[in-house]
Image (cartoon, rainbow, N blue to C red):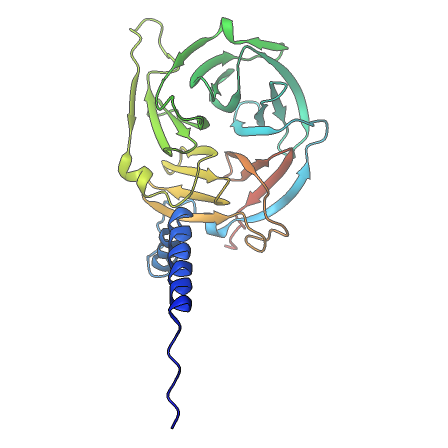
Length: 306
């Protein structure tokens, strides 16, 4: 009777190297945490306050934003104007879009460095980030504005992790708690909460307080952060990751509740979203997404029959 041949040492070495490489890649891409979340989601009861990203379907996919050749970065919804705003970071501009992705107007940005995010604060008031210098710049915008000069604006520099070239990529604002959420892209990936900027009451002293939540940030099973959106109704935060092609819903304690994958075949997508850079939500809970260089998406949750 013939004995089974023993595996050759070289084969075992190569198999070990392959397994180590696969484990390292899984950890780098946060695949194990993502799989564990998906598994646990099968057994957890549905949170009544959840936005439930898993129920959304794409309604507008990869629509080219006509008239824009530069890369768009970030997105915010203006509930007063009922429109969207994005920024371009090559020939720097603030661009107003209709809810169906049409350019309404373009406003030149002077002295803003590398604008990467814009966020609606209140009527005619926004904050724009300068990624490289970690500046937060408060701007005032009205229907007659044709250009904005950073030298004329209230601004502050956080100066956190300045040695990294991965700066501020996303903003979100809680108008009730007066918190400005600021996302640092990665290396390290963090979400700061800035209290006191922009300054609300000129009669009170100017005081800025910055905090972060390491436990929450460690639980984000994505590789980077591109954009943020705060939902006033639920108090939940949405975080967009371009590299992981994923949107995560976080509850008030920073725990992941639901996800929306931007990969082909998920949520009705015919193709994978190439480079998602901006996320916004309107009053009806519809999600808007922009992707470099100039693509526009809309996701909606199907209405339930009564």
